Length: 297
Image (cartoon, rainbow, N blue to C red):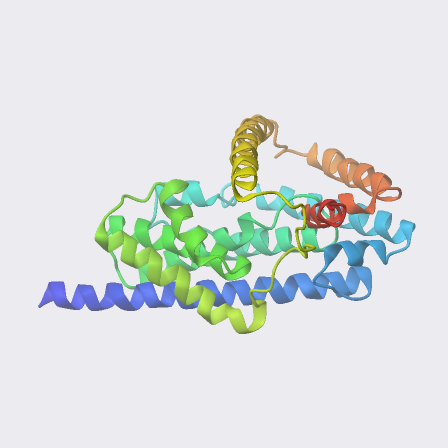
């Protein structure tokens, strides 16, 4: 009987994880739109159009101001004993309750930073919120440590799925990146969480394409196109691996002391100054990518 009751608790916890992941995705989507309206005067699904509609000094001022605000908040968030933790760190102690306010603020700050033109962030926020909510659910339902770990990893994947409307990619993310052990049980749990989160958030977030492409009319044959795709896949793997190594190296130089009051605002000023001439540098890379796609024949 106890095992039956535990199974029911676990089942409800999984469904709640997917539901909360979807709601978190909606909240972050709406927050991003709100920030864009406040900073740019309006919001647009096409970020390239959005940044190009701004005056040069508005592009500079938005990122410069948000960098200063972010430096103040991030310094406070990193202070002991309740400093914020990453998803990987929280998975090491799946039943430990970290500061709810700090973790939520850290996630939302990333969205605000990107919405105001900051060039990095956004991907971590839905994962952090999803894992945070799942961890609270796991403790509330008194789940075992291994199940709490699985639920938090599923929550991180669910948050990612909700924001980007990519349930299948998020499903693989849980196993490849968060190292969830593969079993029929874990496959079903992650699958339910990611697809439920996507279903809940879809009416608001929508699954429209992130980028607008022209029809390809290059006249290549099937085999030529296939060969081109293989070459692109190899190049992508190389650059992705290089980016990962550089990102890991940059992580070692992260500022957590008072020097962030200088480094982050200075970075914002430099990005803003660059945006005076090249507005596509703003945001999370989407404007630059759309600009590149627009230039394809």
